[in-house]
Amino acid sequence: MSSFTDYLLAFLIGGALCVIGQLLLSLTRLTAARILVIFVTAGVILTAVGLYGPLVEVGKAGATVPLTGFGYSLCKGAFEGVDKDGLLGAFTGGIKATAGGVTAAIVFGYLVSVIFTPKTKK
Amino acid sequence: MDTKRCGLQSLTFPSRPCILTSASISGPIEGQGPLGTHFDMVLDDDLWGEDTWEHAERKMYERAVRIACDKCDVLPENLGCLLGGDLLNQLISANFAARALKSPYLGLYGACSTMAESLLVGSVLVDGEYAKNVACCACSHFSTAERQYRFPLELGGQTTPSAQHTVTGAGCCILSANDCKNTSLPQTYKHLHTAGATIGKVKDMGITDANNMGAAMAPAAADTLTQLLTDFNEDISAFDLIITGDLGSFGTDLFRELMREANINVDDVHVDCGNMIYFERQKMDCGGSGCGCSAITLSGYLLKRMEAGDFKRAIFMATGALLSPDTTLQGDSIPSIAHAVIIERSE
Image 1 (cartoon, helix red, strand yellow):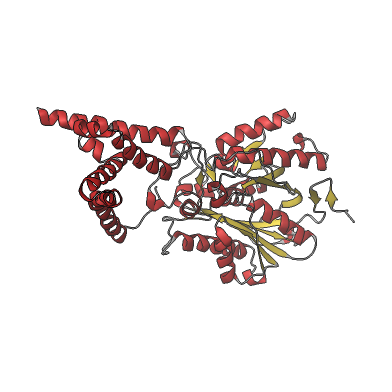
Image 2 (cartoon, rainbow over the protein chains, first blue to last red; image 1 turned 90 degrees about the vertical axis):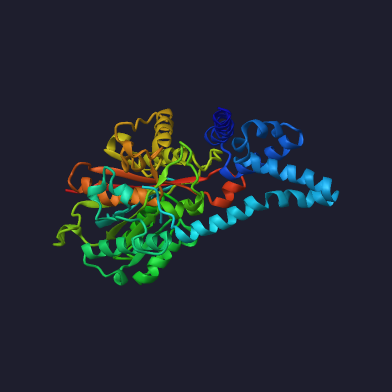
């Protein structure tokens, strides 16, 4: 039963974050690129002030998969880096923590662009 | 001096250059639209066997000119001049097509007003006896325009509801000093002439939203039409068709309202190519846009209706939003222009 509530909470929290993005796209004139930056930065700030951590505990992947989750990983990595390596860790920790996601994005983006050709929507 | 000039911004063409023939090529989506059966060619695939959409676009441009030239038995290299353009930086579609066509060529950029601008300049060349036959051609392609003006399709972005859909298509008209009644060629028009034109002024009402170009262009259309009526001292009732290029549904409402404010009611005679090119069920938001939109609607459909006698006197007024991707990014407002050409049907 607990796994069901996990799924449900992940769906609700992940869904809610995406609804915010969709509302920004539909109701404002912000471009997708700006919304992306806003989401990542918001994730960093919310994590730094301690609000995003609890959301991840409740929503799990629902909170870590959206773009704000990337900001969360960056911020958390920076904190951990400082704990381990001192001030230098603030510069290296974020990138270390997100290296997996960044590399995966490059690798899969590359593979997809090699395999597929974009087409005009019918 | 000034004998062919009329009023502040208008020109008359006393020799009445004839519109000898026209040709149109459309993309697959436009082919499924209400005008699909009227085009000379409808592409099954908007890549048209090429590597890139840019290559397909210039191929459309070249082919549209060739089809039009074939219809009136003129070789492209024997044209007095090829006029026109497209939406891409440095007019690559028109320039590269002109390389292959080998005709004397002047590239024109008027954004979506290019077809009207070409017909205007073409009529001047023919009426001024500087050219016997002039080809006026404009084209646009959805996927190349998205890449340049918005986002590349590879990004898979969403469009906003006020956005219009760039038409994939190329339209070409041949203007001629010949007496069109005496030609025996089957696919030529026998009754269509350009009688006058109004050169538009750039208008800017401060709209900065590149996804709402209809609203940015409507004031330019209203200004040019009002000026045309003043310059020629004509009443709107003297025309039975007012064609705008691609105002779309938002822009059309605004244009009609602006005209009503000037005490001119165009509701009964006004059509917008952007509203004609797609069915509502095709869900193209605010309609079609791009210089191909007015080009193929005029060359593929409206000229044929005029030749058949459905309309006697029309104003073809294409509007253009003169923005660039950089001006949009830098937050500039959208300057717009509208040029008008009077097309008459003689008996």
